Length: 166
Image (cartoon, rainbow, N blue to C red; front, side, top):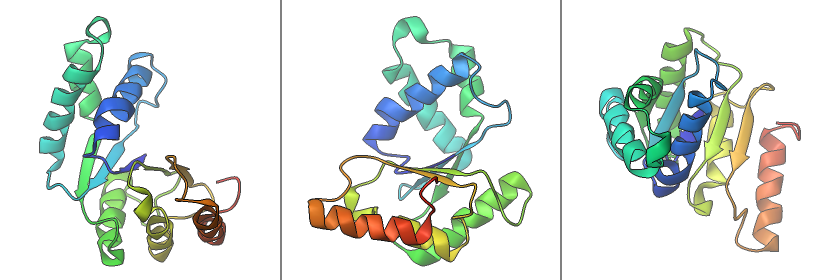
């Protein structure tokens, strides 16, 4: 899973606690990796520590298990990049190749926890580095566009990059 906007508020307050709960319930593959993407500068280790601290803040006290949180964050990686810059997507591709040992990473899930202004750019940049393969999936947070016209334009972009079932 790749989360764009990984150092943002939505990720720390909602996404990571929800993913931790899935982990706690053994509903994630044991080899899962979550790659955070954001403009904030983190190493993998610094991002793991940051998210560990955030989970201790945002997971309810009765659901917290310190050892389990420590175990969960070992599955996190981070890429410092600007999602608006096409050339930065080679950093993401390289990180995914390092993780998977595969020149063409597959079965990817992209989660856009970013401002809507990036919704049109991210899929086009993913396509440039061939990360829009048939087994890739993409999730976009609401709102999808600013109005009906911009939503239709975004829909055209996504249709040109991904198949409907993706």
